[in-house]
Image (cartoon, rainbow, N blue to C red):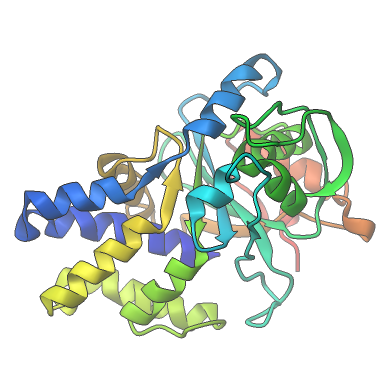
Length: 301
């Protein structure tokens, strides 16, 4: 989970750091690689009156979803008029093959003062109510409210829009932006920085962190650098507010500018049959909604 967030920051940062050196044509290519999820934006706008309001407008909540398929854009919005054939690929949790049940999404909360961030894993077996989210730009998403689906099933049936609607209904948290990350691309990023191909989050995090501190000089071969940046930008589908290099660079700056202890990692507490565990989940959601520090009482062991 930390690896996905750090990779997003590093990828965006490196693109702009070396853009001048690679030239305007390369910059335009990398910018064009980032896909915009306009279908989800249309659906969310249609149901704007039903979505939770932001209690602290200066804070920001970004839902990061991992696509288990060759094309993150298809996974985000379905394809050929049918529900998405792709599903979530889990980000590693604290105990999956690198340590526990995989998280199917990560909510990144950035505080209003830019001094705190919380990465909150959403477990793959979490049961949710999927509100009516209408035809997903004609792609066959759920048209009526359904009960007892997992968040991953919401993604498969209706893409990012239905996933966001389900998470908002569950948590009362307003999702301001979203990213869909091609996990196959993430694997290639791992290889580019010398990290492990799978599993072992800590080792990958160390490799990515070292890359960030040393900067683009470590990717000294032009072909290797170009390939790295091409893969990084090609692996992202985002809402219109995040689907540009300047927007991702701003996000990267917020993450890299955090104090040493500014990022905390938590998971949504889940009990039997995939239901959220109360009162822990309610406390966690309330802290995020009110832009309060996510305390240790919300951490799941």
